[in-house]
Amino acid sequence: MTRLTVDLELCEGYGNCIFEADDYCELTEDGVVRLVRQDVPAADLARVELAVASCPVSALQLENR
Ligand code: SF4
Image (cartoon, rainbow, N blue to C red):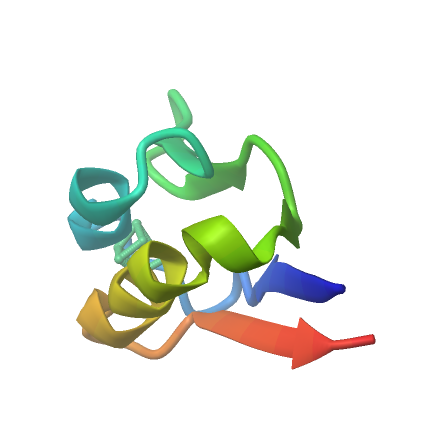
């Protein structure tokens, strides 16, 4: 299973990831990302990879477990 993680020290709330995958990422009142879900099935992988690549500060990662 592939898992989406975030380093909140890096996130600056640009929101690019939400544009690409709003069913995985949302913005909190504090202006940082909250992961709505983390397990990424194969069918969603390409889309979530785009979200990860779109982050200007590389706060998102995909890990294989
Ligand atoms: S694109 Fe990156 S910096 Fe912007 S909200 Fe998403 S994780 Fe945070």
